[in-house]
Image 1 (tube, helix red, strand yellow):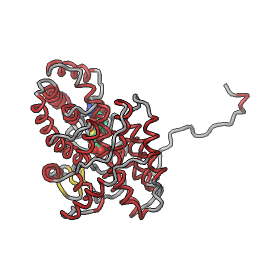
Image 2 (cartoon, protein in one colour; image 1 turned 180 degrees about the horizontal axis):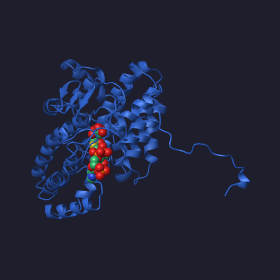
Image 3 (tube, protein in one colour; image 1 turned 45 degrees about the horizontal axis):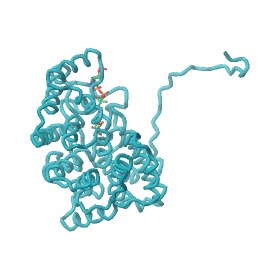
Image 4 (cartoon, protein in one colour; image 1 turned 90 degrees about the vertical axis):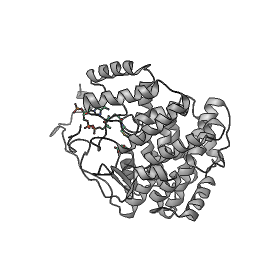
Length: 375
Ligand SMILES: CC(=O)SCCNC(=O)CCNC(=O)[C@H](O)C(C)(C)COP(=O)(O)OP(=O)(O)OC[C@H]1O[C@@H](n2cnc3c(N)ncnc32)[C@H](O)[C@@H]1OP(=O)(O)O
Ligand SMILES: O=C([O-])CC(=O)C(=O)O
């Protein structure tokens, strides 16, 4: 893995456009948002500050941040027609499908009529996506119609409050803040590229975000945090984890939460979320899941030189906060909507429709056969 060539299928290694938002895998810091190192942002910033940085182009001063947080707080309410739609979605639906439908329905109710509205539309989506998922989850699972207009200052605290019906602890709000920062932006990943392709046709913001949610859902992308959890929760000890992983590798199965399309030796987000997962493990007195996760990391590096990506230790971290596994990827959406929207702005500002070519591999020439004469 350490010397993998960045070329070949999947457009790997080819530049598909320019961005001022993010660098991934450059020598040195590894991941930056508008030139700020991810480690520094995760340590010092509020997620709302990072959202402002991505969406408005600079770090806010205190007055701007206060104003932005107040604005987001004021945008958490759900229109009645959206509540009605969410109430129709069954309990066993996948929450990513709920997010996709929620974003799409909002596009019917609050249509972006002109690109002049794009900043407000992005802020509205950022504020309301946690409300969408929690309203549906609590209605379908607990039979309650929650009030989504809480007074929590942070997006992460707001989400946990709605999910549990009580304000989050300081530790949990802090971890959510870090997690949302880590997931906010990542250059031309599959879901962001989806958003940009959609934007390049001059489509509306809700369509771009709805399409991006669909791309994020898959287990090779955002869905890997849920898939990693589904795997590690089966193992009762590091020894069992090692045995099972060796079997999976022997059978050439993909192990979710490992590897990356761009990074070669490590994903800089992993060390950060791993540290928080460790703190949470101590907080809940875990003696199984964290040691199992650490053993998985050791085995994959020893056997395959494959490293944990951002998703792997997110699984245990979210689990220790008692977040249901199927809500893991929707949290990714709540964060990445900032990166997606910022890329849509960037695409629109310097647009040419994205339309690559294909290498044709079909038949050279076919003879038309009337339908009654076909096999
Ligand atoms: C936030 C995010 O979206 S991070 C990504 C989340 N996704 C996952 O965790 C899913 C698991 N990982 C993967 O499927 C891949 O590593 C991807 C999709 C992330 C990257 O895919 P690619 O760039 O095509 O991988 P890459 O070219 O580095 O693969 C090299 C080799 O390692 C293998 N490999 C890569 N990741 C894994 C893995 N997680 N488990 C087992 N083998 C793997 C590949 O099968 C390939 O083997 P081969 O040469 O024998 O075919
Ligand atoms: O960049 C990628 O391909 C996937 C990823 O890590 C992300 O989107 O955060």
